[in-house]
Image 1 (cartoon, rainbow, N blue to C red):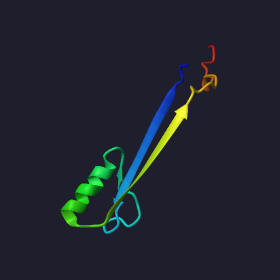
Image 2 (image 1 turned 120 degrees about the vertical axis):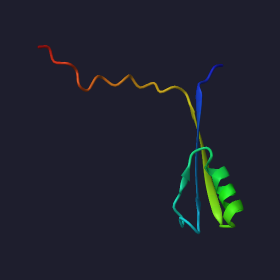
Image 3 (image 1 turned 90 degrees about the vertical axis):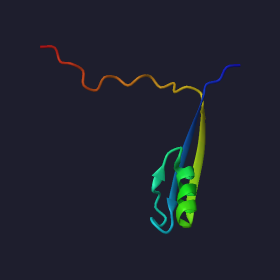
Length: 72
C-alpha cells in the first residue's frame, strides 16, 4: 500500500525577559536560538513545537484561472 504523507513542523520561541510571552524566534532553529540566548544571558526562554502530519494528496481540482484573458 502506498500512501502520500506530508509532515509540517512549526517551532516558535521567545525570551520572557526580553519579549514577554510573544514569540521572537520562528522556524526550525528557534529552539536552538532560545537555548543559546539563555546560555548567554541567563534569561528564562521558552520554545513551542508543533508537528502536523497530513495523509493523502489534495484531491481538489485545480483552481480555474481567476483572470482569464479576454479576447480582443
